Image (cartoon, rainbow, N blue to C red; front, top):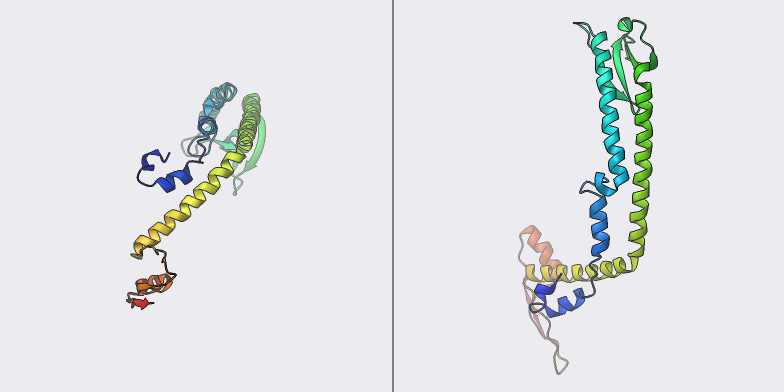
Length: 220
């Protein structure tokens, strides 16, 4: 990872040499989880089939409900298809039910419209609910496998954490040193301490924010 900087910054490269790539774990996570944190369809063959079956059943439910909604609609009052509690239902005016059999899920605030799951789609909604449960179980299985894989990589992850924290501190120190126009302190062979044009870093930062100038000092 830091190979290109070996010659330019050999000491940093030496610190970075301990970093573990964990390529297998990264590839496994990327294969299962997308950038948004959702489980991909291709995470497993079983999940892909479950989601494909969901789409087929969902289309059948909506198609059948749309046909029912059209039959119940009037020029001044449409019947609409909507999901409610994981099941697809029809919202229709109470006076347009015409003896429609089904499960009532609720009503509008005025009581003029009824939310009903027609009996004709109950089996399909049940099938959709079963597929949803199967999807959740498969996702749990996949996440458990990823968790176990990550747990096995904990020693290497800890090495990376410590090394990256060390490099981050060094980078922060370098950036601060550059911003403050600082120079390295060189050891004296005779044990003397000499500071030329010295500025306290905290004072320099505070003065820079307020637009003031820090007066440098010489110390011997």
